[in-house]
Length: 210
Ligand SMILES: Nc1ncnc2c1ncn2[C@@H]1O[C@H](COP(=O)(O)OS(=O)(=O)O)[C@@H](OP(=O)(O)O)[C@H]1O
Picture 1 (cartoon, rainbow, N blue to C red):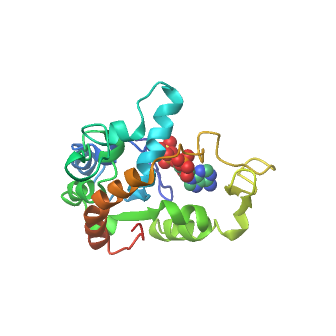
Picture 2 (spheres, rainbow, N blue to C red; picture 1 turned 60 degrees about the horizontal axis):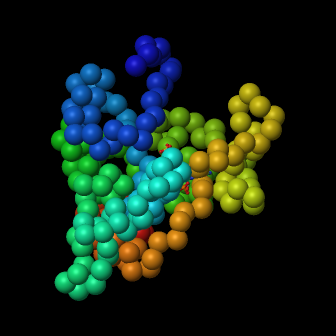
């Protein structure tokens, strides 16, 4: 991490190490337990499909979503139902309660902020307001900075810093997802429910995924 001067905040962003076992201990011992951690979480079922969409865009020959999500390659029914494959990272990452347990061994809950991925789309200024409060910053980013772009189907920035033109996120953000059979989604939803409830209890926030 670069040196941080008085009045500055140093930020680092990566989606990958929230689930890395050693990450909380390493961050706590190198940067310190005072570090503030912001986690954007989204319905784990939609998250898994989004993750699959990303992999599919790079490997078009990929097996179907359900072939990867269930142990015997199918959601099935009754005795034929395959167990959800938690070895697949797209599924495992969404077990937020499990990963959070690991972080809470090294950081107090008050040092973590959970941003709702859903509200980031429906109310970006509201979620950004929570982020700014958490970081002890003045609420500089407000409603005025966002507009809903009909073509993109997502909120975009009216005027990013250093530019006079509006800016949306790139093509790889907000892509259409492949259609997944309803039964597959239902089974995954059932699978995640207890983990989601545990996560709501741990964070004191109901993300409304059920
Ligand atoms: N404003 C705006 N514009 C476009 N996309 C938005 C926006 N806000 C949130 N999202 C959602 O962000 C999802 C991609 O973010 P990721 O977390 O996967 O990105 S990354 O892991 O940091 O690369 C992406 O997921 P997909 O819909 O699956 O593409 C979006 O749903």
